[in-house]
Image (cartoon, rainbow, N blue to C red; front, side, top):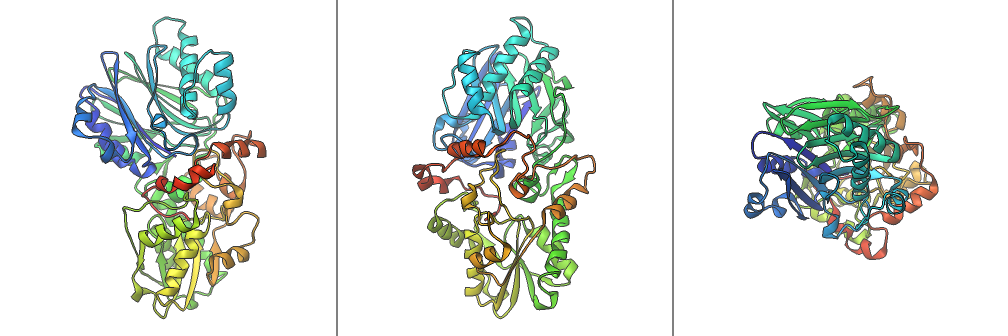
Length: 501
């Protein structure tokens, strides 16, 4: 999962892209990059770190031009700690192309071999985004055959790209001297939205990016659709996939996206309220509401669900944890002691909300379970009589291969275990999970046009239909933290939005 943005304007875009990346910071904090285009020349700056740390005044001055793009990176594969893995990526032919990508190609290994043996292109990093860039460059070269690049040729190239790629991808590319190209995979797994402000056109991962920079949100790109924005701001759009079917990643609504975003016609905030309503029914069947004194969310993305649950059950909703916003997400931290230390640094209890009470803690999801166990213990240490834990999402039982750095099966606390076995590991008095069908119905009811969801980490169904156990094993080898050496340092990859452990 990353955050991407692209802009075409009649004024300099460097500050606008910087502001947009700040609004996307929750989608990645490992690295950030911006590239601008002026008179067929690209100007780029990228580095490891958060947006405010990567870009200084001198860097911004060196990014002239009225067209550009940017990315904040959350690494799931390749070398997470290499400066070379930061995006955008650049290739000089044809035309000169820079690209940013949100997602994960599940056939990147095979494509890399094709690029070397058939297309005679060299890949210099372990990033699947560089593979994607070279696939796009090769198809653009084939569609134009050295001629003038027109929208029809761009869309023909994207059609060919769709036929070669597997997995999830939302892409924005700047083509020197021509304009900006954006497209989305045929299942629409990763999000992409379009908006404008006068003569300025912006494409970004989330609608909040558009609205927060003064643009009017117009629409989401459809699955398989490509949009080409020329340097005059003219927008051309065409469906480039043979059988597009909208299956957005359901984890975006559960946890990843900002609550003030609208994705594929669904308010993320309303989706989380609906999850709380569905979860309330599950709680009633497990713990009588009279046995619960207070509902307390585990900050932050669980708050809407917890509030709605408390309202429906007629139980007091209270804040019991204060979050240090400068310590990030912990669900991808591999070492137990590292996670335990991070949780204590990240959350502090308000003891008066726990002492002598039966508390129901509400979290958005539970991945490894280590953080949940630590939080339950913190509640007990603060004097809670009983600690119940409810998850607004179902058990996470399967790895994610579409751009979220979910652990391997063996690291998932729910894999191969019953709910009671998980409860014993976490140490709570009762554990209540959302069910898969309830989750899909709660969110899907907000937009009947959605065919389905990628809910693979919950139900093991991979919507692209091409994932085997061998594929998952190979992808895990590329996953950040896949080696012991990487695991020692991967606590640096935590993101700032919320808690998913």
